[in-house]
Image (cartoon, rainbow, N blue to C red; front, side, top):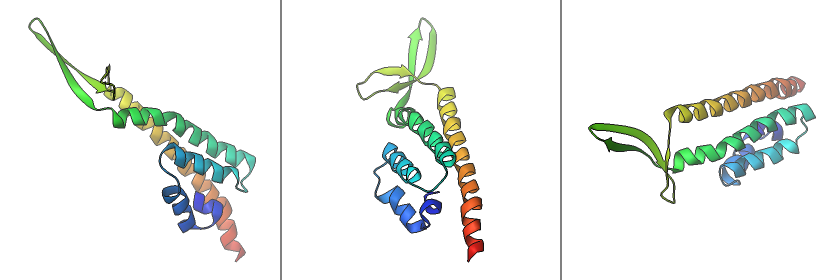
Length: 134
């Protein structure tokens, strides 16, 4: 999408992967590129709505990726039970759920799907118009 905005695939790759740190910094850089582009206000708003949603999902992603998930066992009388727990850097244990992790992955997938849809629309609108000019 950045390549469409600035017309240069290599520059776009460098903007996203080399000059920005990671995670939310990449999203902020992407938003600045989109915000300063010649896209319509509606196009910019649609794209930034997706990056805003991705930013809101990022802390959940960090929690999933950086908190070890372990199986905790407990014995109550003659019964052994198990549950998934996440362990924070401070050593606190919290319940984890595969359902929650799957929901997060689905939320991210929907955002990526929407971004792909928007990128396709931009390619069709701007690059095909540009290609027919020359």
